[in-house]
Amino acid sequence: DWTPASIVDDSVEAIRAQVGDAQVLCALSGGVDSAVAAALVQKAVGDQLTCVFVDHGLLRQGEAERVERDFVAVTGVDLVVRDEADRFLGALAGVSDPETKRKIIGREFIRTFEDAARVLNATKDIEYLVQGTLYPDVVESGGGEGAANIKSHHNVGGLPDDLQFKLIEPLRTLFKDEVRAVGTELGLPSDMVWRHPFPGPGLAIRIIGEVTKDRLDLLRQVDAIARFELTAAGLDRAIWQFPVVLLADVRSVGVQGDGRTYGHPVVLRPVTSEDAMTADWGRLPYEVLERISTRITNEVREVNRVVLDITSKPPGTIEWE
Ligand code: XMP
Image (cartoon, rainbow, N blue to C red; front, side):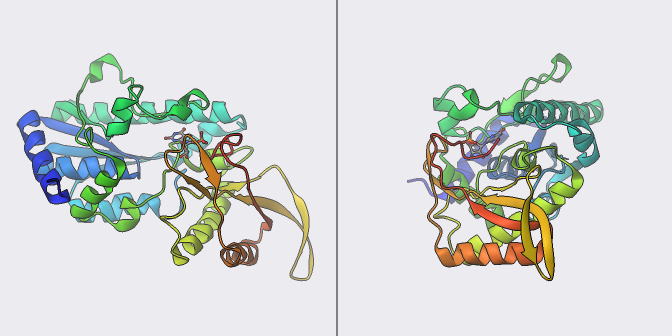
């Protein structure tokens, strides 16, 4: 019988057998899969593993710190952080088109990661790269998910010839719930283990319009309120994902405090789903919606309207871009 502890033991043994005394590299994204994969490899081969975290500045409030501080504290992993927010913002300047945003972010991500890998490789002679591939990705055989045909998704891949690593895929036989159980067994923080799916291009595709630092800061504030209230209502596991979208190029008239305002609307997009291929809009209780709406418009001056997306997928995708 498989228990989280026995999965960990078996994986550790298999990783040790595969890796021997070679050096290993892993890219952390802030997500569950890369975190659990890295934690397993760390447990197996310790400081033969180096992790790289490319902070593209498009994560939500607290997520970079989760990786840089909490993940490192729990696992003792050797982590290289690349703070590349300015680089990504610079590359995204003036861009509103969703697919163009995705391509730019994917490209910059690969370049930054390659660059970090080259620097490390010069001294460490790295042989293996860890990938957080899960069993459903393997059987779907394309890797990634079905929505890839509709929106280009980016993953770490396509590294150039001088960086030909062999792959270690410690989650290759596991389903998502097993990955979470293993992460918990390894002592990872529960909000990391239970993190909702989050797109690689991050908040850039939840800002409709150009991505700027101010807009990111604004969306981070709003998103943090929505997530906090969802968690407080005990609905994290009932809801598959809860994007909050900033309609940055839209303004509407409102009245806040003593005067007329001309602010931005935000869209709440709670969805339920089994696999993200199809989804239904999440029926959040009115009291929860009310609390989120009131808090956002009270606490975030630039937002004077909160709207709810009640579209299923299809026809709407989960993300707005
Ligand atoms: P859509 O919006 O196509 O999203 O219904 C389906 C699922 O995929 C996530 N998503 C992405 N994940 N890179 C990712 O890693 C991406 O570019 C990307 N775009 C969408 C989305 O959050 C949802 O879970």
